[in-house]
Image 1 (cartoon, one colour):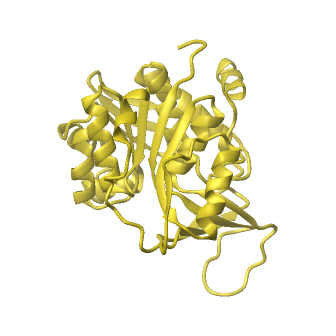
Image 2 (cartoon, rainbow, N blue to C red):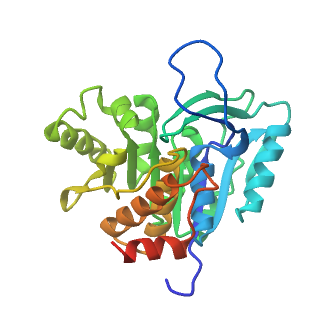
Length: 308
């Protein structure tokens, strides 16, 4: 799609992340000294939208928050990154989602999230007729009703869909996976769907991903950090090793992977190409501090891949 802007819609959760970098993750109660303090937007689909926009997509974020200071802050930041927020709705009387993020010097993190309150689940206000104008649709599993609605509209319009399969109930996945084309899970997310032993060995991993495909997904995948990405599609079972990089901060790496993958699929890349592209974007993000500030641009990613 040279010289054309790929349009991606990302739907799901947006949070305000309050970040404290520390030497090591806390092991128990007590007081700990942070080396800095940051207040930035976060959330799976919202981070994915920022990633897609930084990589050159014409990206829109569809989501919900409270009509409060946190909601306004999240909107301003996404606009600054070039994301279309016309359908990022702030609801009067509701409270936005806020996360406390503790990041250690080796890049690991601890997150405590408040999901918010009073934000309605009904997706009836979504302008689903606009789905036909997109090249790819991404959603996380946090807003089940919204994800099912936008994916059903995308399926009717033959627009590819990408699901961020984080931890959720089996019922949530059962509602969304039949409308999903590309389901990419975290390890905890796949366990929440397929059981605690689903990643024990190659046979159980294959069986878990096969269960996902049985619900109607073309591609079922699980990202495993430094151990790379596994996926099952119509061509078989595949493994992509991760790129070796010096990790500084893993915050948002999975979200960034999803945003990059959705863009790549929207551009017409095949699954293997999209997995490699998304893996490179996530790896580069991990070499830098910050969930969104660390996202590379397209020139950096292309140069990184050219050297591999």
